[in-house]
Image (cartoon, rainbow, N blue to C red; front, side):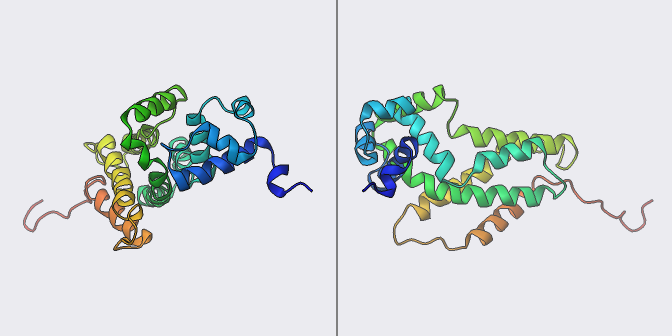
Length: 214
């Protein structure tokens, strides 16, 4: 009698298997051969659906992790009327969850320079990489600056790096370390991060003239 796993489409079984292996063995030790075995298909069948391990990894990030890039694309096309603080808080909340789950998946990659080089070359061919959300957030902030919601001298690239870098660093320091919970909840962390960042981004409020001046 067929199992629920065996009746799922091959493409989905491959992603299921890849996600399981990436979480249990790490990216460096997850091969297409192991993914195919876990998925219950041949390696040749795997390559009918995906060109490389990097493409499978991108699909796992896209389908199984919090969706950071689509949110940034949405803000880039239409920031809406909810304000910069609201939008950046949404981005920070998504980024925290994304890095919480993606950092452990990719951490083992940095132990093997040759594999890391090959992996990032493959990601570049797919038009993917860790720079994509950084550039998208910078574009959004640049648009907000151009329409006057941010200071004229605000640096969108630096601000994007500070926000996403802080979320990524939190994952490295706390979420990827067993037995070391973060000192703040996600809500407290993101609220404080955005509030601190906005001090250097928002225009100065109008000041009342000093007494005795016209």
